[in-house]
Length: 339
Image (cartoon, rainbow, N blue to C red; front, side, top):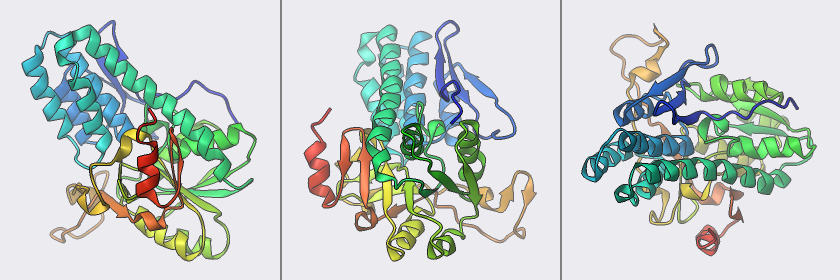
């Protein structure tokens, strides 16, 4: 495995008071960093998927509040800023969690807010590394692991959730390889997962989204590992659209289906997946690839950005607090006070 400087897509430049985001819209062709001086800029980056992944957008939003405080905004203005950032994307609970956490310190001054944002960032990377250590033993030796979307360093403060499990397995000497769904229509798997795994020397092959079932039938996949944007109290999991179909296929072929996510993704206040809001993105994102239209003008398209996988299809949920198996209501409650 190639050892390189860890990939951290969300940073803060204290010398210039700027939030720095690796622009994921430009990958893999171009590594461009956005330098944002306002919370409005951070919110726009979240909405337009310049930064994406539930933990990463939470960290970005925390820095969005901090940058406004460092530039002189008072508590009342910061409350409005925080509410605006929390609305930027509705499904990922980490966004609202991070905004709520930093909002509890709005009266403590700019230095305290920046320190809190740094803490959110550092704790997320530490959580990912702990998840990796806990989840790596779940992967059979030499397994071919299927993943969907991007749940790697690019989706977090660093290291990754699902890809963190894979990274940790490789670091422990398990020569797992990865199949990455392309993940239409934004191609997070083909553009982002493939890019960061290749960057780190982890063998990865890209599949179109419809190929997984056939390869499972042929015995070419040993397990599935995905991330999550929100996990309900009963173990239902919201993740990138297409995840539910993979879970059904894995169940049919008797393959383990694992979910890796930090505790901040667990929403014990939402009883089941039916209560998770599902973001609907513009249809143009489906019918355009770059500037090229791939469907006739006037033909409508749907883009629910996420789906919900029932907990009964999930073999285990890996968080930094432990590996939880069914029954999930009891298991998640048991570790709720663990940190």
